[in-house]
Image 1 (cartoon, one colour):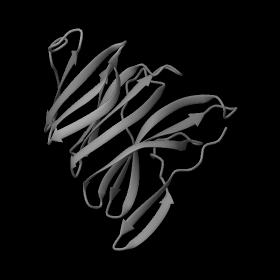
Image 2 (cartoon, rainbow, N blue to C red):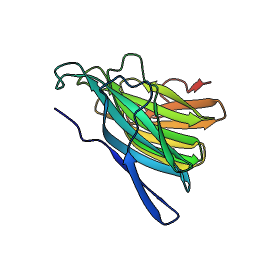
Image 3 (cartoon, one colour):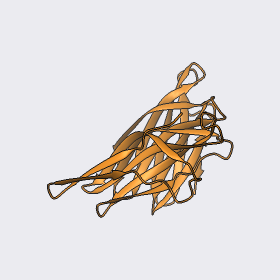
Image 4 (spheres, helix red, strand yellow):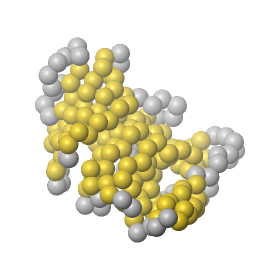
Length: 193
């Protein structure tokens, strides 16, 4: 099978321009972007979109891997980087993203081995670098960031609803998980630096 090429349009000073979305420089030859999940703009003209790209062994219908790419709009042009993912992930699918300001973003998604997307991931962008925080056995599907540097992600763990609370600032991110069957924090909050 083949996938259509992702086309990005940008409106600047009343002029609409478009181009095929770039692939990350480290994407294997033959990679194709096949979806975008969300876009958020920290300021006018400064946006981040998350998408997925795939590459296949021969024949093309056998997907080898699906990775997450971050597309960043700055100074009128789009650049692409591969977002970090859990080393055990063969397929990673991004979800919603929220950019509180230029270069400060939080996103969620899910990953797993081939054809089994079973674990949640939280992606944060700060100081030009992406960080991935794995949330094993938690499927994340909703994100809300009501104030700067604080977000909550909703999802499930098995059949149990969960909330992942994120507080970040500078080089640290604290993650706490709660569930309806176990109110309060499940385990101790984890701080990543």
